Figure (cartoon, rainbow, N blue to C red):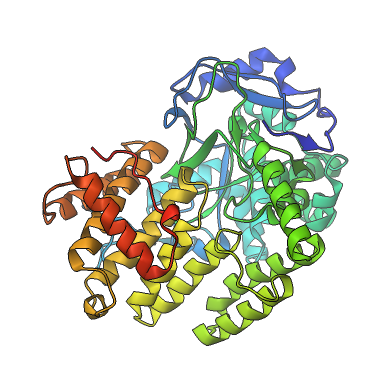
Length: 527
């Protein structure tokens, strides 16, 4: 279980919410719950609040669904996503529920920008009318005057606009004030976002009757408690969910949240016992322990001390002792890795340019050998190369690098593993039908297909466990598998004899890409 330092003080606005069980029960009753939950004193967050399971929750189970208090679309998504219902033009799944094929032309919802502010977009007059009634009437003029306001500023505008328009219930407003994070508790985060200036500007722009200090504390609560809206089609914005905000962080979480339309869903990633505190990750788990530590401290002013972080910290210190590099140099290099991944496409680097920069970064830590594939963030860099090769139609190298990145992943469960596996299979599917798949040094086409079939079945099993059978993403996986199933030669995944054929096929493919056979995938269901 995770622990966080330094321990924040209890919320100044009347104490921690777990002391008001009537309010807690009201919030929980408004959820679409699948299990019994309680809001109680946290065992992770000293003097804070946590969400607890009151009954055993199996792995891969739904915990609750909710409609968040406030959502806000990212600036780059205004003309792509409806600001009210989150209908999107940037969709990966077509009207038939299948994954969009390359080059497929789709009928997409028209997103029309507000004619007054030119910022918020809507898919229909109905959504625009509902947004006006709920918040946009009060934020529209502010956005018109500040159309380039960043995401966090616009989120504060919306929180204040909803208060001004009387959108919050009495209980929602009380709960909002119980959220962790006021200016005194989280001053570094507040200052980094120029909190005082933005808060004063928001008060004037929205013409809020709240005092300056109250707005500053609200802004700090927003900065501390919002979550990214995550689903398989990207992250279109941020959200503030009241019950979700009381779930504490772990880098080894037992639950996660994703969005289906405008609805937040929380599901279990591992078995949760009755009485256990539910945890989520606040950061990107595909990054190394030092990068996670850095981002958590910058964004939330605490350090995670879960078992995963302790283990990875110990392993990294042992590696630094053996190899002779400093931890400071390592985190500096990891930051440069992160910048390289982001800049490779925005700056239109060639593959040779990325390889040259990567070699320089590697020599700073490992002067005489390559960066280990299993040491983060190399797995993500492999996928970066796969994308670069794919964009130049080199499907062979795209498949090789994607498989190397996928199999370098040691945490093979949860949404990160599903995403890696799915991304690899997309590159591999393009490769096995490309002319380069017939080259002499490549495994037999039947072995390539059996390897693909087994991993697609694995993706379906893992995806349904992570997202649930009724999620659009899982339904698209089912349809993808059904289409491939029609072309499969027996034995099929799950039938007698498939395990041996898959094992042989996987061994051949791993030898071809230069990956140790011990890094292969153990399918969940073979027979």
